Length: 416
Image (cartoon, rainbow, N blue to C red):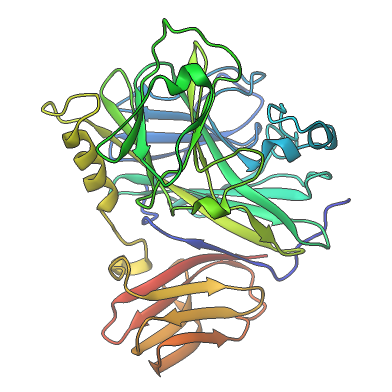
């Protein structure tokens, strides 16, 4: 089916981190067939290449590369984004129930994306072509936060067809082999490759995987597990540098079919894939869903050992519990779990309150100027629906702010 232009569609994403990055600049590259752009914060740099699926082509801490890096022709490197389940990528894969289907549809990865900086120094946004079989088009937005030295990767799965489709978002990040990978243990036991499962330990409420390179690899070298309610997945490399993915937990009932799960690890002799999947939900016709992952990179303190220990778990929990804003003018967000939910639902804005509040709701441009004022005053607990925010085009903040100025909830919106 041919791609359909999405008119008056508003893409919504939760801004977990402030887009206050150092200036976006083109990054030098030996792969001359595509342009690369970089973001830097807290001694860590992230680079995105447009010509190969807008994948993350580099992640460096203090100048040292963390990711497994290959060539332009070899797709198995860097960090990319796919739809799940893998079995449904093509008609041949689906009919044969081929969980190991590869490569992915070219339009999604590694086809060329268009885009670049949204503004002078905060955010990178890229859009790919539509895939005729999956009916998907991807948009990817990357931002950095100097407040807590993090990156936020926001992924849009756009349904280009006239009927609802169902997919789960899937971020696949590749590291050199070695190190320790771990995440909170969920409700379901780990499954997958038998030799790999022998290297899995469940202690301190955490699932740990340390691959013994002398162990034989047989079958499909991949394991699957539920990541629990805390919503993080971590990896420590041989240089004692810690990488963390923070995300909203996906309950087991929402996992993609054909054996997929929230937290997955794939290994080879040369690299390890730290894979994360979101909810398997319907995408309405000519609409989209958004999903995001926040990345932290930290050097481990000298007094914390690399391995299964409580100080390491406590350190990760401390890092992911940090919260900063990301609003124009340095506004601060409300505390986590404040009982306020703000969503966009195809031409309407929905605000859900856990208790009565006196607040304002407005659309704000990236410079902090108010564009549309939707509400001011007291609202009772419950769900409130506001009309469509107009025929504007561009990128804006949708902000719910209580009397006195404290931000209760916010969304970054792009309207085509």
